[in-house]
Length: 298
Image 1 (cartoon, rainbow, N blue to C red):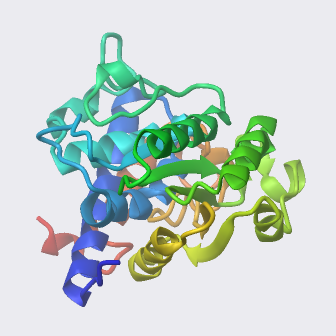
Image 2: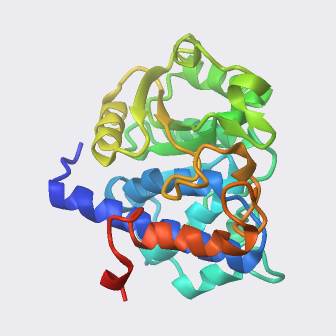
């Protein structure tokens, strides 16, 4: 496990904020897409791509790279923004999100863009893909040092395919598999506790022979420590339940399931008028929630 200095943590937090700004700009340009999940996962993606993953933007097909599989593909704006900031393609291309002919569609298409490991669509399928990839790698090379990271949403845990994949991963003791659950408590039509209660989630996952940790999904240091521990687990796969805030960074959007599938300009109007939503979101992010005064960033 790599130790993160205070300076490194600060740099990662600032990078996550830049990625959140890119997400808002992308969604505004596209006039469609998901806001809550991508903003909430920016810290995790930043840590993975700038401190954890073995990867090379100049050689995206490097055989010894770690793999990141995005199962809840609708949060792809955070993946696209992170890949661009990491150097996989020009940041200017982010403004083509969801446009005809763009490489950046509403779900990732593996053959369209460097850095993508899978195509997504139906929720639940990504974990099965990750389990298959991790198992195949162990068969091909029992001494491989690769890790397979799978990102899932808590609403996605409603899918039966998720639990089938968990069964196989636990049975095969895939210690090269690390699953990160975005536990933000929302899904497209409500709060998870109302739509389909998941608790006691940690106990359920442990019963499938997973090492389970729960962590603050916005603490770079806590996330780094949890991933380091997961990498050291020898006899079973790992799951990190990352407690996140939906739409993190824009307080007037946060924790509201109505921002799951709406971009700024088409979201709920009870807190911010639609014609002001993009402006307010970017101002919140550019000033770190008001900690920096507007004249300081001109």
